[in-house]
Image (cartoon, rainbow, N blue to C red; front, side, top):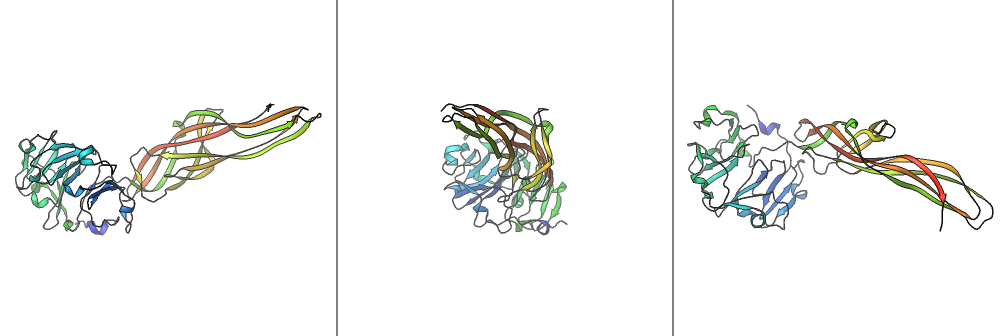
Length: 388
């Protein structure tokens, strides 16, 4: 039989916490004392998660009895005073969630439940303190009597499964027996006899204080990467002066010869937008090597340099450079001033990418997004009369 403890990775330590819960987006929320914190999933065995988490709620969070998420990401909570609330995920410690963001959807009777949880379709389930499993649509207002509008799912035997009870994304119900730590997975048949069909998959799971399903969406490293230049676009174009000099011969009656020479490196900043819902392991800078996107002016298309590569950061702003040089003669007539200007065209580029990544739990998957950067090209050197 599977031994989860032997194969599980230690991701960190959470000291002196009350509630611990994972959002559907893969963030961790913890109540410590009276405060609420949120942050990325911990990834380091000896790391202090609270050093990377943000406090998003000050005071009174120990007042909540049950905290859990709807599949759409909304936070639901019952209080020790028997009330029920729902609202957006807290994000500002100076905005009180209960009074400034949440909506009260229950005024009484919510202390009658040992635990509450949603199935993947957003149906609310509850284990009552009388040992029954019930379900129904979530309440919509404070006067809605959910206890009279839910339906019975299972008659008895549910309280002992409340060490952990939750639906997986595939709709299977998982549970852990408080007494022996046995873990089960199964469907709920119409007659409510869960144990008749549930699989026994392990034991001693009651040794874990907190269990949860969470998306495996934290990137540890990039296995392979490729730009998709055929889908790339030039979004804007502008001229940019990179060198300018003025040659003054107003005080002379003879021509003046000069050489306009320069070497210039134009720096370009770029970054990778991550539209795939994945995050990067906290404190880790993910790097990889790939070619450099550029705009092929004659073909008016985006291409990737095959001869030049760059070590890219997936998480930080990148800086590359394009070097230009030129040398030309300048003849300044007597009594005149000449201005010489070197300019290039700067094109802002958006280039989609595709990458195969490994997550903190060892899974491999493909993600995509957009490289937002630029290219500079088409050096021109011009001369004109200059008037002071």
